[in-house]
Image (cartoon, rainbow over all chains, first blue to last red; front, side, top):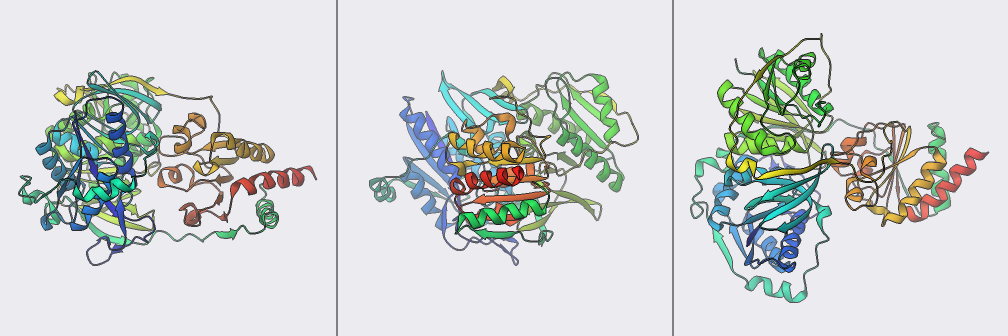
Length: 262
Length: 325
């Protein structure tokens, strides 16, 4: 079995994110990291491998600028055997439709039995890439999966949907996005971190992946940002730093009383 | 006449969900402004009456694909892609919920269509729909336009209100759709299982919500004791429900309940969007969290930065003392 994990480089959680008013895109300067949700996908792949399934290799796949190599190094440190980096100026500004198409082209070249990814990116909060990729690859798909077992060449998955927990059987090959409840990702060992740069990394241009240039980038995107507005103003709430808990509790109780909540 | 096609999700008894009815209402309103009509796609053997009843929310036509199963996205992608291609719908609209994300994403790929998700409002500009979408933890709202039609709009949970109109009745038409080979490779084993005991949080006026910040399942008793002192109930985030700390029936947010109590006391809850959409209309929001950067501090009325393990027991005692006096 061959598993591909889709990875994304996102601004680090500590970075104050903003939209560049000029390009109307997310300002991706500053410290970056591997999307935390994708570490759950890598962990899920590792657990399948360690659980006794015959996993030939785990391949980390990303699309992004040169700097995204660091996210791939982290993915390799977490257990991927090698990585593929789709990078091309022509891909910049791709929307969900274009990004899903481009990633699907790269994955087609890998012919995986299972594609795993995190349920959302920490920056875009789109939840959708997995299902876009799946339709292009003509594979069954399920998102926000929190339990997954491989038996007899198929997956038994659980996830929460509108009416409670669903249990779904999915034939392979398949595309599965995982929720963060699926596992507790491991920390990479120092040895794995040091060795990550030595693992094979395949850099591909759009042309290498047979991506039609008119379907990607800003020009190939189907949506356009017309305006960026501030959210409706809400009176900011009062914030108390708890130094003396008795005093804090007194303030909270007074606040509750004032609002006739007790 | 190009129109708007809405997907309406239903449970095993054939009841449409509230967010779907909201999407039908929203589509009908927008269709009115565009001078066109709103139609609905449903799958499974939904009774005629239930389908016709969608007319009360403004639908003029309901397409029913009886042979397609409900509950999994890809067969519904097949149904909606066919309807959009055959009938020439300009937009597909989804209410909040997980299936809408999946179906909308599948349609995006199938039709090469633009998609916007987490949409909180839709407006008409120059005869076209423009979607408003909050981004970056709701710190900005972008107006998203579409280069071409068809286009896909996926609403945020509770973004669209279900409004009954003048008791109209929708025309019902059955449609035969051949499912794609890969659409039948995922099969439902059990649907809508509610795990844990059945608790009622929707009628409580005072709610104490517990999140991962409680640390472990046992610490929910801190929330329960405070809720008992206040005379309220305990709710939970998805993370702790998935972890098995608390019953599913107590879950608030994207795939749980939506509540609007007089007080929502969030204990150890970061305030991720998926949770926020289920409780943001609470009258008073009080948050206790040790992380001063938690998003919940951006939208609470009173925030306490501190250790809830120290604060909750003392607060419980103080509330008891106050109520006893």
